[in-house]
Image 1 (cartoon, helix red, strand yellow):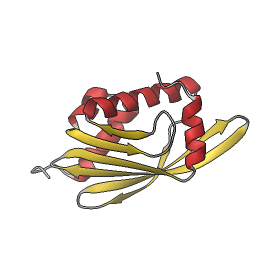
Image 2 (image 1 turned 45 degrees about the vertical axis):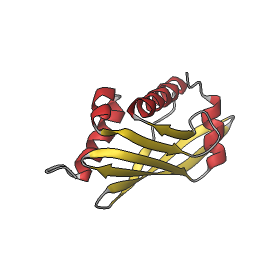
Image 3 (image 1 turned 30 degrees about the vertical axis):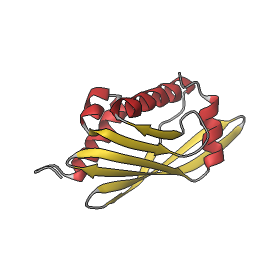
Amino acid sequence: MASGTRVEDVVARGMAALAERDWATVRTLMAPDIVWEVPGRSPLAGVLVGVDAVIDRWRRAADAVAAAGDRPPRTVGVLRSDTGFAIVQRNAFFIGDTWREITAITLLDVVDGRLTRIQTFVSDQYAVDEYWSRLNLR
């Protein structure tokens, strides 16, 4: 960890920047070779490598959620380690005429003051895959 940089500060700045869709700030918080692993079979799923790929996927996902009029997830818990965080979030969305609620856990690794790895896990992968498959991820 860089001198004076706390894991909490990196994660807090990142979450605030994501909420504001401040991609320039998000970019400064990631290592150039960042890896984001998203499980499933939806257009959102896959292993992304590099700042541009991660930001592009976040931007497209945020655009799709906003266009659908869905609410962003709410954070319900944060677990901290010396090198990262586990963020627990709840989200609810409609699939057809059914309201679905899921829990997502995102693991964030921070090295030298930058995010190096993101892993996402969800409680109902089938629902998440169906949701993301219905949204237009241009």
